[in-house]
Amino acid sequence: MFSGLNRLLLSCIAMILVSGCGSSDQPELGQVDGTITMDNAPLAGVEVLFGPKGARSSAGYTDQEGHYTLYYLAGVEGAVLGEHRVEVRTPIEDESDPETEANFVENIPPKYNSQSELTAVVEAGDNTFDFNLESQ
Image (cartoon, rainbow, N blue to C red; front, top):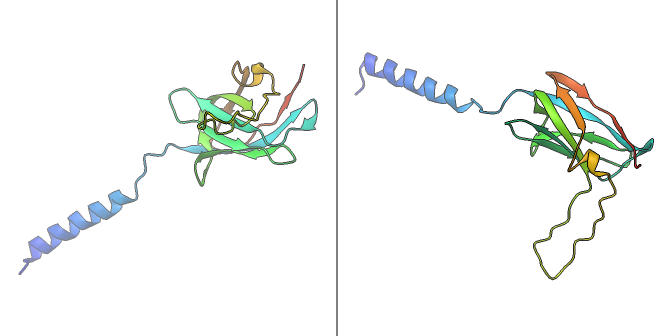
């Protein structure tokens, strides 16, 4: 059977393997929410994207009151710490079927999405970023 030394060695290896299984490559995240308005009115049903340099973006969608919460991964709230370029855009419908035409119109000016001038710095803990966009 196993000697005392072999049992100790096997126990140590098992502890190392078990403790290693709980580790994660996920970076530290800050919780992010806020409200998006356009011309002081809530902007419902738009996508909010926070994109840091060299790391995974976080995204969320506004509700009827223009409130959003960012998600790093499905079910994982937050955004990577640091400076982000922020985009607010109309969600794009699935265009995989060439027989159908996409049914969306981007009513948000490019300076808030494709040419975004919005930025935010996410810190550890809770962060609230409200943006009042102007249609003109």
